[in-house]
Image 1 (cartoon, rainbow, N blue to C red):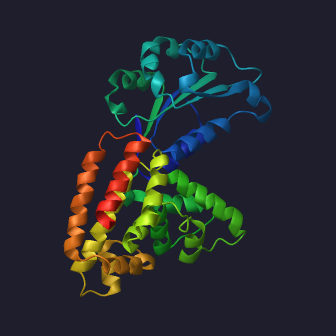
Image 2: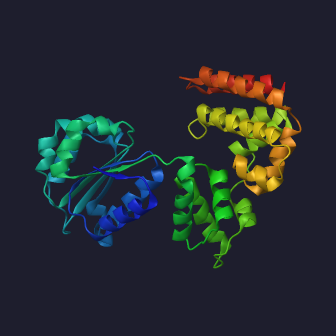
Length: 338
């Protein structure tokens, strides 16, 4: 099993797949849709354009009967040399992969089957891993955390011809979080709107990366800082209705980090802006927003808010419905700002 944990390993894996597909059975394990889309494109590019309708099969796990997949893959490709079966969201097929491993091992080399899964505990599937050691290839993409984002931002921006300095890179990570798909989409749009110019600065990023969007995590913390209860409630309701995009635990974690930075500003009140910005890890562009927020809440109140958020984080465990999410986020806002 090949594990990808950094940009250089990712680039090597991409080049290897682009140059030569020596196996015909793959499992691609990734929680990040960006990696899935890149790998799918690599395989799709291997199919002759005029034969795509015959030899390129993009399927979804919940729609796929394993016996039918085996039957189709046992046939030889139509006119071409190779056919692909690219199965997205195939977590539900993991048991079938193990059950029909002998059948999979007899699939002709002209049929390439790729299972795309998202399973953080996949390393425990010893039987499947052992089978693929001799019958295929597993590529496992490790989860990208916030403190690992910068190299990925630079890599993705470079794909669109942009060169980012350190400050601009850090600004992108603050605006997007560890969502590589969102980062890629934003640079794709920026490339379209920005024309041939590949020089971008912090102002360009602010204008194009949705910072003025009415409903996002940055705007939520901004409204908490301004103590604007009505706006906080509106954003909270939106997050609750879109909980797949804004899971309540992520929202609470973001707010906790926000108030932690306000607490740090209080403790660094004798430091200059450059020192504060460096020590609390906030881009200089946003430091005034944090300092203004700190003027609306003293250190003692900030500690109390941090305890309140901790309590609601415990309450949120196991919460999944829109109504429950909205109730918790509403109660939180009322307790902090009411």
